[in-house]
Amino acid sequence: MAPKQDIELRLNYKRTFLIGFAFFGILLLWQVYDSWCPTFLTDIFARRMYGISSAQLKAGEPEKILNVQWLVGIIMACDNLAALILLPIFGVLSDRTKTPIGKRMPYILTGTFVAAVAFPFVPLFFHRNQIGGMVAMMAIVLIFMMMYRNPAVALMPDITPKPLRAKANGIINIMGYLGGAFATVLGIFLKLSDYINASDEARKVWTIELPFLIASVLMVISALVLFFTVRENEIHEQMKEEMEAGERLAAIATPVDDDGPMSRENRTMLLAILGAEFLWFMSDNAIGTYIGNYVIYYLNSVSSATMVLTIAGGLASVLGFAIAGGIADKIGRKWTISIGLGLTFLALVLMCFVSPTGIEAANAAHGEFSFPAVLYAVWVVKGFGMALVHNCSFPMVVELCSSKKIGQFTGYYYAASMSAQTVTPILLGLIFNRTRAWRTLPVYACVLTVLSFLVFTALVKNIKARKVENVVGLEALDGD
Image (cartoon, rainbow, N blue to C red):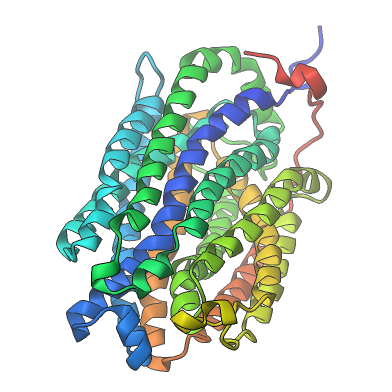
């Protein structure tokens, strides 16, 4: 009889792909949220502070657009502050939940359906210039997406042995980026800048309502696909031996013991990863939050260019997610992440030199400038680099716990990212208000990316998992 450690570990690609439908719904909704809501807030605060739309303000006194960004940052940060509190709570609750449909699925289904119902009301209240209703709907969406997000992300490590999680996370993230792609394609055809630049009488609510409606419908469909194809309790029973083998093969300094305190080496590793993660999310979220306003109000370009940027970066990210697990197998997760941060820094340095171009003939009627093509290269390199980072960082965190605490450690991962996303919109908004310069955006992101690189490379050990025999080919697509 072969010893236990020689058990053959297999990554079931079909099942991992189906689990990815959870992440499909997450990124689909957040792409719409992050692409539209900061501009909604900019426009509605311009009306409250100056009595005119942001388009009129841009034409007359464009520097005042920067004055409202700190308010935009506060609203966006309040959402993330709620997430910082709620994600760990739902992680621990789902760890302790036992139901006939599993411990994660009740939270996934409830969060999906409530968020999907509330989401289309966000642009409706904006169109009616009702800031209270709009922010309330944003808050409801956020709360129930937090109920959904932690359990949905924890589902993959629940049923994937530790040495296989980097490759599985690549598949999960590719599915997520496909969800984001749906949102970006909508943004190309339903141009937010056309709505913002139009007079109040010419603004058509369906231009901004359709992306939110479609996102809600697709999110519900993705949750139903997940529910009907992934039988959580059954898979847990089938995977017991493989999960135990994965524990023995984990890339950690000392073995995990849930009944005793966390070892000093593992705790240091966890805090270093979370600290670096906080810094790179400070950088990445700054770009994600303000890029729409940067394009519309600084580059004075059409908003659909932001969506094309997102697609270019998304395609590069898909490539990064596809190969990150293989790179990590060869050089370790630490150096894979470090390479990703280095590439991201180089891209952001290039962005520092981008400036508005001349007016394009096709857009002369709107006074819109042509879009600087160099930004596409920036987004491709940044997208690939951050894919290497995100693909390997989450598996490194959940590597440091057993299956009993995956939701809790997923909460730690998201506590670091959401605390960063709470701080960075407010901080950068205040910096904009001081500097009155959109060029601050890439400089700010550059500094934080360098700091994350220094923290991560200095404090995180490169512990490689022992080699495992992974089933490939048609056999890997077998059912459960």
